Amino acid sequence: MSTDTLLRVEKGNAAPEELAAITAILLARAAATPETAPARTPRPQAGWRRLERTPGFRAPHSWQG
Image (cartoon, rainbow, N blue to C red; front, side):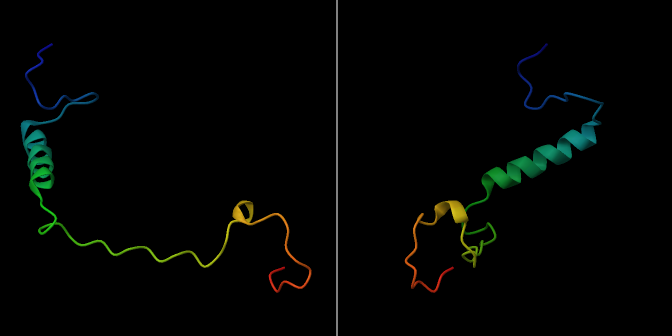
């Protein structure tokens, strides 16, 4: 087994064209800078609360039931 290869096919048989395509994709992603990468929009905060994160006691006059 040679250790000088970048990619190894674990299962199945990949054609040289398939290995070249995945190598090009991986190299393009590695070379991408934050300016060239697509901007991600932050996720909005959830509108509900998890019950296990709420305090155990609520006052009787609380509007949160």
